[in-house]
Image 1 (cartoon, helix red, strand yellow):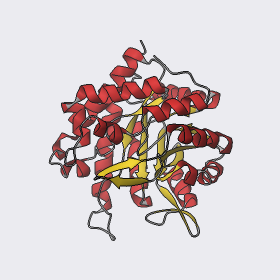
Image 2 (cartoon, one colour):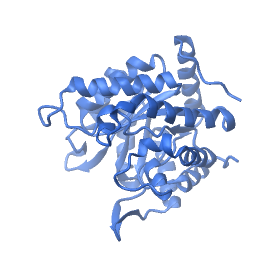
Image 3 (cartoon, one colour):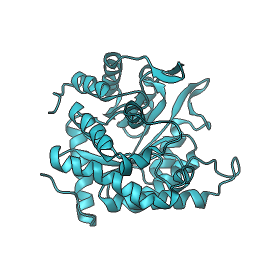
Image 4 (cartoon, one colour):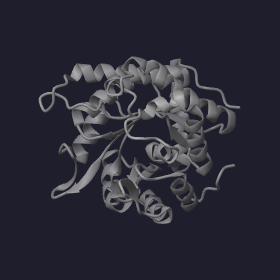
Length: 314
């Protein structure tokens, strides 16, 4: 049984080198969508998905187990919206430490019992608020929310931090700075949600890949990548751009195609096989860590791992 890494600087540095060595030796596979799997198990609009780590623990563990078994080297904690500002919208903002700690312990406990040698990433998503001057939330409030979440996840023992689905570069920078301050030598991954635009790829807030990589690497990100917003095929031309900006190596998590509503339910029609065929091709363009975002399931990760020459775990 593997043991959780302790929180001293030497152990964090060893972990960072372990992850780097693993990434140098082979392509690392992330997990797929958490929200899609929660909905498959009965999640309803209006619920707080992060609270399931307290109220539906067995379901969250089952999701992590399926992703590990599918071939994920790294799974994300169920904490995408686990910052105080986002949790406040569900009336549970005072439970940041409880919810984030519970989520980390579920993933780490499973990893230590059944999947030694894998990694658990503390997942951090947007605050859910627009920063001034476009919105009414001041940057320090957002920074404090990210610091609180990052510190909690690191204290709970996660191996790295994965910041995802960022649109606003200032907010992304605040998240990276908070994660870096908490993480010590542990890796901090940061990805933004880009879409094809008339002048290349941009986020919804107009951020281009060059600005994203330069700003977030300076803020302390180990690696800057892309996730969500677009399908694997639409992301194909973005991968080499990000890899070049990162010095030859990036990470990606595309959606399972474009969503559409069918009978009031969001569906993604891309097949796992097509997704895997496209994403496995990212490797030739500099993707060293690959996984899935919205609409992807353990079946997608199984297909992706197989396309990369991996055998399914038991």
